[in-house]
Image 1: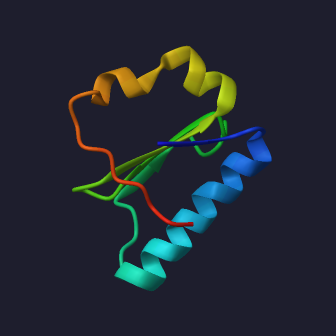
Image 2 (image 1 turned 180 degrees about the horizontal axis):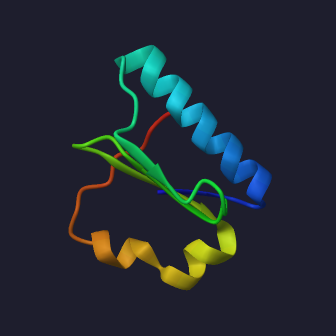
Image 3 (image 1 turned 135 degrees about the vertical axis):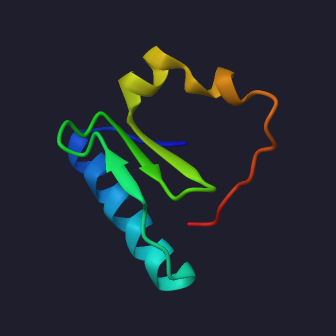
Length: 77
C-alpha cells in the first residue's frame, strides 16, 4: 500500500513499481485496474497485490484496516 499527493505521482509510482518488479524479479502484473483514473490503482501480481492510492482516497477508504492482522513488510526505495 502506497500513496501519492497527486495523480501524476500515482502514475509515476505505478510505472516505477512495474519497472522494478520486471527488472529485479522478472515479473509483470497479471492485471492493473484503475490506471485511467489514477486515484486507486490495483496491481495484481498473483501472490502479491499492490495498492497505489491518491492520498485523499487512501484516507477515505482506510484500506489498512482490512490488513490489520497481516504482517507488514517495509521495502527500501
